Amino acid sequence: MKEKERFEWKFERLFHRMEKLVEELAKSHLSVEDKAELWNTFGSFCRGMMTAFDRDHPKLKKETIIQTV
Image (tube, rainbow, N blue to C red; front, side):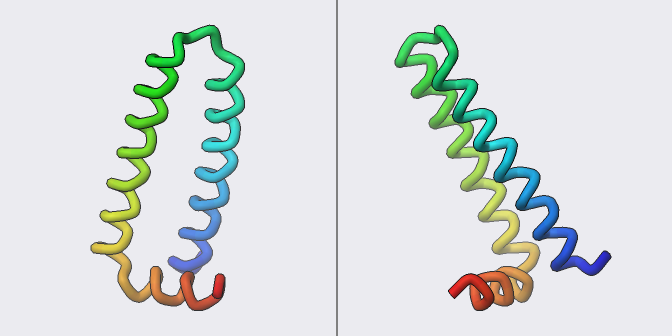
């Protein structure tokens, strides 16, 4: 599997897990404050992952962006 295909596969899996997380978080009986804290933590994690991706795979990121435009 090429690096680009591997990235797309991992991104697809992550996207589906994010959808499930959001659905389950909305259904949970946690307080609004706890939900907000979890969401902010998850958002921070995702931003960190994208920063690492930008740093480690600039060419792959460029190819992916060009295909989505």
